[in-house]
Amino acid sequence: MKKYFYNSIIFRLAAPPLFGILIYLLILMFFDSVNMLTENFFSREVLFSIGLTYLFFEGNRLVIVILNKTYPATKDLKLRILIQYLFSILITVLIISSVLYAYFTYIEGFNTIRTELVTFNSIYVFTAVFYNLFFFSLVFLNKKNESKVNKEKALRKNLEIELRAFKNQVNPELLFQSLEVIIGELHRDKKSADGLIDNLSKIYRYTLDNKNDDLVTLKQEIDSLKPIYTLFRAKYGQSFSLDIKIDDGAEELNLIPGTLQLLMEFALSENIITKYLPLDFKISNHKNQLQVCYKLNKRIIEDNPVKERLDFLFRAYVYYSEKSHKMWDKNGMRYFGIPLIEVGEE
Image (cartoon, rainbow, N blue to C red):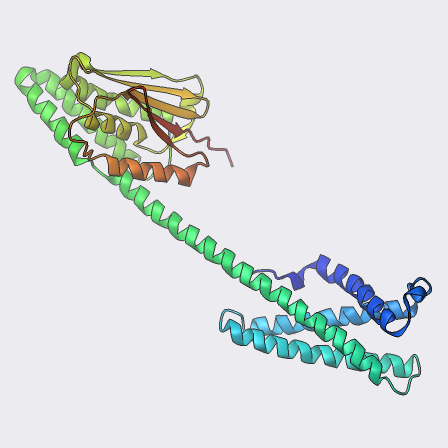
């Protein structure tokens, strides 16, 4: 805790007058009557009560400052509470008794002030108890908040590590299918196979080039889809199509590298693609949200090897955007809503 309430300038200036006047009212009600309140409100006794309260607060604040340096609450909180209450009560009684004795003896000319000592000390000791109770409530609140902050930092750090691992991953399923397409194309057209090999290299070059980047533009992501589309277009022909409709200016918004590649891999992995069951992969945007959709023609075996990586990608977007991802099915279509992130200039 960098600043406790006792170091607040506003608290140190505002508290003594308010508490001083309150304590004076209690004393007045004890010794006089409420009817005398008006004529005594701006008397010397009020100023004395305010001054005494100021010394009380500063004395207790000094105790806390010294204890924070010599025995901080992080060591043993229970013992710290006990020590602080003992010293606080001791310093309160010492300040109140000495100032009270000097005031009534040398200014008011009283010989006996036993009743006043008991009354004032009782009130201020009672105030000291609540003063320290307030302090420790802030300490407990701060410890609770620190625990939450540390937990969030740990989660954030783990997410950063997982995100770095995600961006460095080479999907073996995609590699296997790509090589299968290239080998098949080698038997048909060697020149076309050379082009597919070049496209495969572009896919993994994009992954390597952006492994240290937190975000990339939507334009870069769309461009990275073209090699994958070309590869699988060679396999599925007219049964696989890509439809992109993006508003002007939206291409400069950002998203996590590999997002569109992964969504396309997921679609290819979970769907049966034939002449009669085509896959039309559509990409559009609505303001700051990217929408991807395609018709569902699910395979009989629904074990999708891309699902785990997709789940992590969705968790990663929580790290970058307050808007969460969406994934839903409607009328035989699967939809994805991905937040587009606007990076402000510092």
